[in-house]
Image (cartoon, rainbow, N blue to C red; front, side, top):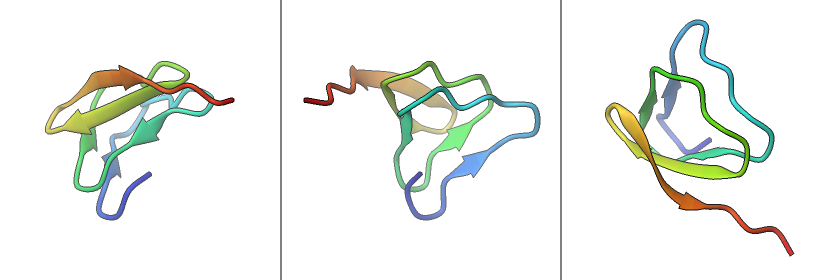
Length: 49
């Protein structure tokens, strides 16, 4: 998670998901997603090589 990011109560963060700085997660974050904004939205798929 980025600096100042907030994960609301009951929100599940999927494996390898990223929440960018200052973003607010109010719904579950899917695995390997990159999320941004308030409320956060998935903006990209994370690829780990």
